[in-house]
Length: 240
Image 1 (cartoon, rainbow, N blue to C red):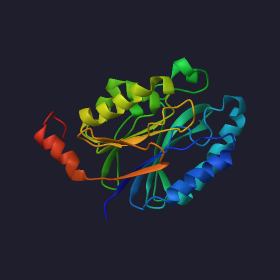
Image 2 (image 1 turned 90 degrees about the horizontal axis):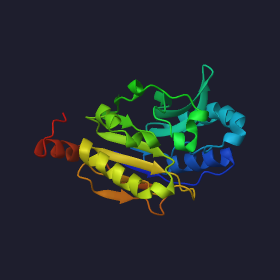
Image 3 (image 1 turned 180 degrees about the vertical axis):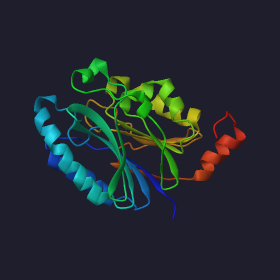
């Protein structure tokens, strides 16, 4: 059985528990052999007015997701406090555990993120090997930094959990497609279905062929390792 690549797109409400249940229901509808990407901060949104509640929700939500993922690989971001510092933290779940996490390395200052979050070092942007995949993660605004693209060279799959503003909708579409072409890999982009966001979740192949969620809460596409290998063999740009 092939792995499925799954991009999620759903609305984040003011009810954090409702958001968590929506995520868990979508996970149930994906195969055990799947790589699932959810929108950035999909469980709470950037709810700065209730930040204490956001932070207290993080641990409970994380435990619920760990219990639900089973053999799936699930990528999303959660707002949490670690050692007195607040991060927008990307987490990779697999086999009932968190196998990797890091804070957002490029904060969206235009949106005021630097007023609330500690910025992680870009040295933490790296490839993670899991279940035979080389997997990379770029969190929303990080997608705009070409040096971060280079750090993920050689990835089979790059996940993009996002909360991307609708006024820059075309940028999100072009950048996610270009990343797949430049790095010759699959890109799973997941953006929120909230009104201020692009609603352009989707999956792009190493050849640059894109399929967007449109009105689907979960888009599923077969992963084919041969597509990655074929692109790198016939259009050799030096990616191993």
